[in-house]
Length: 343
Image 1 (cartoon, rainbow, N blue to C red):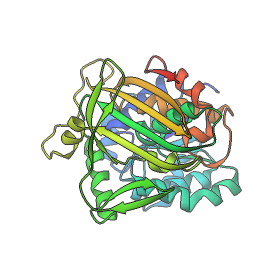
Image 2: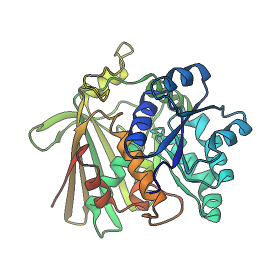
Image 3: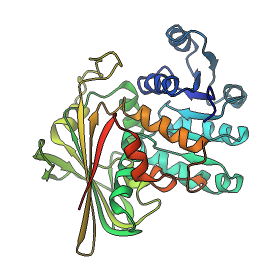
């Protein structure tokens, strides 16, 4: 990586965007602060004097082009991604630079694969959607567990969160997704996405110690149901969420995350347990860490570093597990997470 390479962060003043800006600086990049609210950008810039500030809106392509001028890559941290992903990707293609986002919206990620796969591949461009805790992280863990397998009967991703205090962005993105689904929920079964009515099934998941068995909601579908099937032939992708975390997310009065350390991280902890099965064989990957929003920043910046130094496996629109060496990537995230393979 060339020291000081500029990276535009669209939505830099948001909760996750601030973590990404800090991580870019720590890794030797030069963030360019961008987003829709000039006032919030100015306030953010006061925390990091000397950084370039470039307001832009998704309905003004010229402003996006200006925001990306001279940048080596762009990170989109501004949801809802149903609104922002398309225009920012188009600007990245015009600029000839890689695009990475942190979208957890299932429909927005589907749109990215459907609308930009061909133009991105034709241009030799790199577009990585959902390079975040939901979508990218789960996909990396599934890919690491799969090893040399290229297909599986089932992929299970169980999220053991100590709690979930959602940001305003999470709530806004969730509202957009619910509206697009007409209030239905989504699951991946029989090799395809289905939109269904009814309550989520309740069951118990055998998390490894020290967490142990916990009550979870099944079919709590996240962006993993897009990223994993994008490059693996798998019949079932099932995701699970601890009941307590799901309840906090659903409650209208749950507060936003509160910092408890000098890095601005919350006290939330997580354990992600992945199981893949093919025939009679089973493989497992486990990761532990802290703060699902904060950990997205090292995921994003590690991805950028690998893209900009040519440590990638494909071009076009690609999920994290497809474009990167998953096991090497996850090990590089230490000390932000711990990661192990089982079976």
